[in-house]
Length: 232
Length: 218
Image (cartoon, rainbow over all chains, first blue to last red; front, side):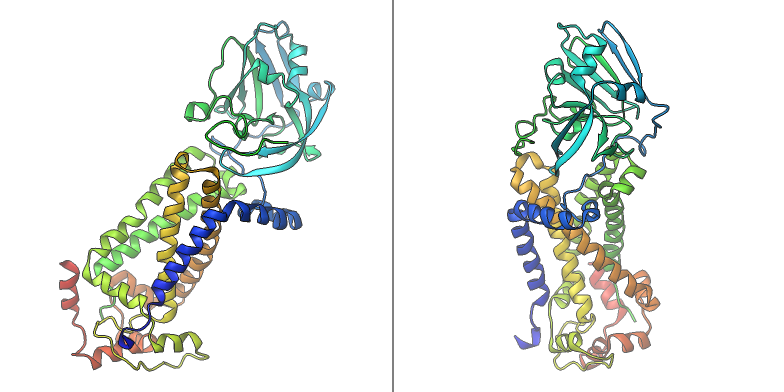
């Protein structure tokens, strides 16, 4: 026995597997502990330390698009009485709404209490004169690939915003600036980034992620097989 | 001196390539500044998943070879000279006190043994938690979040351990040569793994290179 030494390697491996299993089982609780302590005390670490409460940046094209406020245009078309071609300043001259909402990603991360402001989708659609009979929107990004859809009923909710500001500052390029969509009650992929076009259409056309298997009606906690707490 | 047989070098080389692909794609998926530079999330995710599926395969192939299993046994076992190595204050060589009949006795120091155990455990855990994330519809939110948590934190630990592994290799050309060509000079072996050299002279005679080739090609 002595001549064979002690199986330290095996103990290390088994110990790691045991710790890993504990981490999987209690990861959710550990996650919020890390997120509430580390991220709260050192904000900059949020994007580097795992699960410390930061946003993850997802982009579906090569790199991510850049657009200055001066060059920015938002077009609203389709079945509307007044097609719009708005500059960033035009958006700022419309009624402004602010809200603070949790942001929940379908991959599991969540950022609590993000302050947003901009123009309510319902206010914008009223300016464009969307008919009461309209059923859906298609929404497109100037990255050339990202698209989304909403039913009209969903679009006019008071928590669906054309966001021009996040955390009290202009929406940055990586977060979808200068203008992005915020569909607060749904998973993050519905909140299209780099917003450039909204069309009022007859039927729901599945967007980029929906064509890749994600649910069209992406209510937080009631879709995509997930049971996250609703956002507040 | 023959230090590594082709199957050991095959396992090391293929796992190295896969690990580099996995870490590079992980950085592109995970670190915001790199995510926005690389983009193409769908493709990067596919490369990461495929590489993850492939990662255990070199190990499974290698374990089919008796010479590899013999090395695993030696890496697993800690002898008194290994504990002495961990406690050592200077680099004076530590004399072995017992003999294991395997010709790989003393081939690795305790640091290398710990690194191999950590790497093996890491591959098991990363593979298992990666599977949970890949087949996420089969698991509850709690398990998915827990698996992601473990996968993310263990990544950090692996990057730190790998940095140390590469740092030590960069400081030792002979060690790198041993993994690249399979051969090391006797003077290097005497300086770095005196137990190994000593044990071979004390046992039934030094292990002959062609003998090991025969084992590895079985």
